[in-house]
Image (cartoon, rainbow, N blue to C red):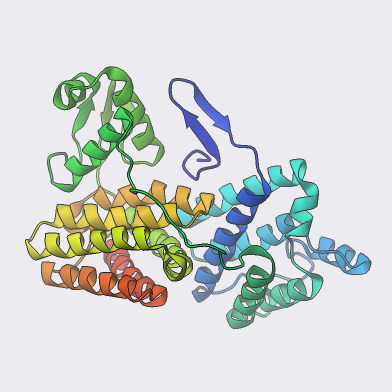
Length: 371
């Protein structure tokens, strides 16, 4: 789970190594968690009392000495809000972030206290949750973010190609996803290491590393005998993943597009134009591949390690079943690609976010209704 959410590093042939928290990674994690909580406010807020509210005891202590409420305590409250959305993908991400905060408090206690909430803002958040006032809770979280967590970047955001192909394991990983997108591979297929080695003309090591990476994000299941299985399609689970991806994409688009450098903006427009062209030609696989590349680039350009890891772990789910992942006819998908590209050209992150959210949520709702 922690590997999927980016809080451990996956080392080829060496298992995993836990990534030590830093101020930057802790702030990144909190920015994502508060956005997840804000996005979950459409669900009924948890029924609770101030006494049982996570952090209520620390709040009174902090208020007494003029200090801030620990980010760990605030994180517990935000996790409870996320839980109201009843989305397993979001739940896992929120729990992983809180585990990261617990470790950060152990090794960086001063930082976790410094980036916490001031007592007045925390009072507002606690009262809003107790009173089930989503608008007030949203205002408290936005105030905390703007004051402490996420000032605007001081330089244009840049990034290279979103899916690097320099390493063989990355090429194998991308080739398997492309095969899912174009229908070469489908649910129920067994991916044998020897067959993949022959097909792609590579040695066993990059094949094994690519399959391990796909297993960590839930695209394949590893089996005995040096092979993996593409599991049966679960529409409800995919719907939850797309709903979570809509939230993370919204955060990335709103924060990245206004501050994007020219090279990164040009590359993103290319992805959306290619998505439009693929859909126009009736090639859903190409359209999904280009849309996925755009989302992966946004995570990378955001310079938020948590957001990047979450988007990288969920975006490949778009490939799980091309026929139902993006609902609607090709004309509709092509129109979305055209309008997304136009929004990026105008540096209109809000419009791009609305369009992306509409596309992903429409698909998510159709999948969950069918599951």
